[in-house]
Length: 140
Image (cartoon, rainbow, N blue to C red; front, side, top):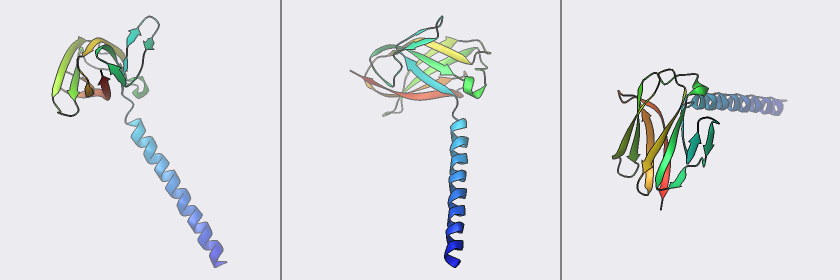
């Protein structure tokens, strides 16, 4: 009888741990619903992102920011796309763009990645607040 009680208690503790961990995972993933990703080319008329990846050769790319999962809007009329070298932590380039504050899905074309390396790309409000960010690797 005692063995059976220990077994049932162990199962109950295991169930609580599994449920608790899954709730934590949901909390952490819902906080990251601002997406920034990359396309070799983007056609707004068809909403087609060609060449979606995290690794590219040098040249121009389109940076996409998607806030639809968060049910939020960009909230500003100007956005800076900031490229920071992950190794040196130095800002490599900043590209200013005009937007409409009510946008929740935005593309920023002709962002130039000039040399190989690993970079953090951030969409920033004029006050420096990060809207979304992601990492990219540029290869030769």
